[in-house]
Image (cartoon, rainbow, N blue to C red; front, top):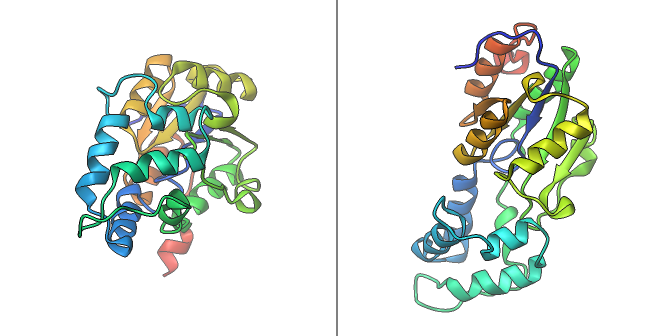
Length: 223
């Protein structure tokens, strides 16, 4: 649990699974809709993204912009099967998965409330070739650092350092919110405060403990 710190000037947010539907919820909806055997996806995810995954997996290369979204779709589709053992259509594969991700309105309100309270906000995201809703996000964040655009990915410490440099802040002046434990651990090693996101209410409570001037979620209270 974070403790109150008046030196904090900015909160940096991950995108997918933090400002949107939780990743597992979207993935479950996607595999059900397309009748994909979820075990085939889980196996690819474990091999390509787990803590023990070697450097340079297809997900790593997608996140750093070394391969295109279309190429990744083909590589992933080759690893998947439907529940009937049939191949999965590669064209637009990730776009179809991201279609099941919805904005988390409570998290968007949290970012807006932080800005209203005088905090700076930034976005730091590992991209899977997805299209970000910039018409909404540009109004919430003063800057964004997208892995495929800078050739770095979390949890590489250099991408956190790049974000801090662009903000003109020291690690101790920022909080990082992410739904991935390895990404939080990497940020904390650099000196940032970390908040492991599971849901909007918990993240707001943690940030309120750190930043007392952050108020409650008024919209939620009036529902």
